[in-house]
Each structure stands twice: as C-alpha cells, then as structure tokens.
Image 1 (cartoon, helix red, strand yellow):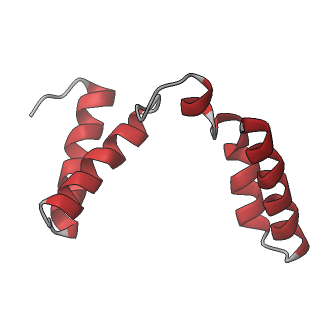
Image 2: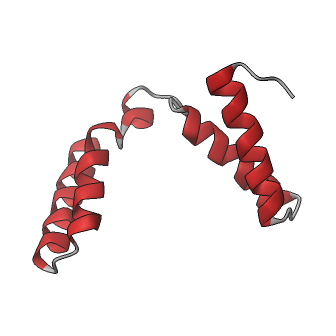
Length: 89
C-alpha cells in the first residue's frame, strides 16, 4: 500500500512540475521522506511530530468547540512555548 501511494505521489509531483507549480512540487518533494511515517510505524492515528500534535489540538479547538482564529493562535503559541522552551501555562 505504501509503495502504491509513493508512486502516486511521484505522479502528483511530476504533474506539478509540468504545470510549473514549482513551490508545490518542492514542498511535496521535501515532505516525501516523512509523509508515510505513521503508516510505516503503525502508529494508528498517533503522530511523531510536535507540529502535528499542535495541529490536532488546534483542530479540536476550532471544529469541536467552535473557537475563534485568535483563540487558535493563542493555543498554538502556548503549546509551542511548552514544547520548545519548557514554558508551562
């Protein structure tokens, strides 16, 4: 399954290059090595990245509790400060 998805990703990257979507092609190419990490490591919905965990928290705030954009930004700032600086609110 992963190999099939990698081949499809290569097709998408080639399409972007052919349409001169250089930034998108570059982004996908850079993301390619880590794109299927969760599936490969059988994480079952968990993540390996702090950014992914933050985005999960923000998404929960935005879509479950119908928070504001300013509130999502504040949550992101607090979570980043906690992860990278040891700051605890």
